[in-house]
Image (cartoon, rainbow, N blue to C red):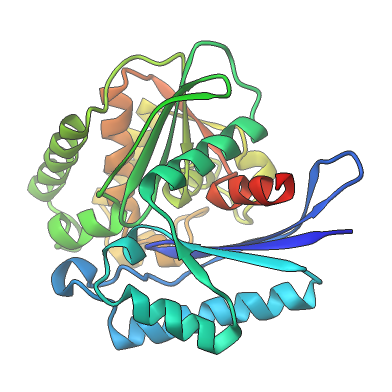
Length: 304
């Protein structure tokens, strides 16, 4: 049976998925994991990927490819998103990955990232009719997809994510109320400029910030994607978590049940992004999708 591996190289983490096509044409998960590798660390300041960050991320991709081979994958598709779109030395990263493990990294545009995220969300949730907005917020960018059913009406990418907001606005530990207000105001300005607005029938969120906040809401000692998938975050949940994260140092956040310790420094910025999104889209709540770009790309590969 055919098995395919996906390596999704994001600004904050690298996600790894191996799927197998079942006889009924559904995709069975063989492996689905991630590692926080911070490819965008220092990117806003220097414009490039630093030597240590480069080494860390190349090694992570090579390790995931070795795992793909162990699991019997006959094809690996590796894609890079915001950090590799922006870094002046992204070509060097692509070359070093090729030399390390033979994998060819394809840097995809934000619009393609958005399409794959929408495909993943639709394939994994029972959705109501009317306008659907799917957003995928990561370390360096946030993708928005406005659609109805299978039809994508509008999609765009905003160069704003949790790592960028943390590095530029939330510099104190713990963050001050003025810093949080400045971060919220900047997020709102950038989303307004990009045209984020409306009142969709349903709002779906994808990405590590959204799934982490759901895990925190459920006080998960052990991460369970089946509980995360289709769960709900209300605007009150989001605002309560902003208050909680703001009151704690990064070290104190590391002990919060459900929160991966390596997300402790960027989770406040991510929560601020969710707060602005729900306000701008007049949504009292959002539905959480554990499925993301990697699942959409797997669906694409198996349909090819």
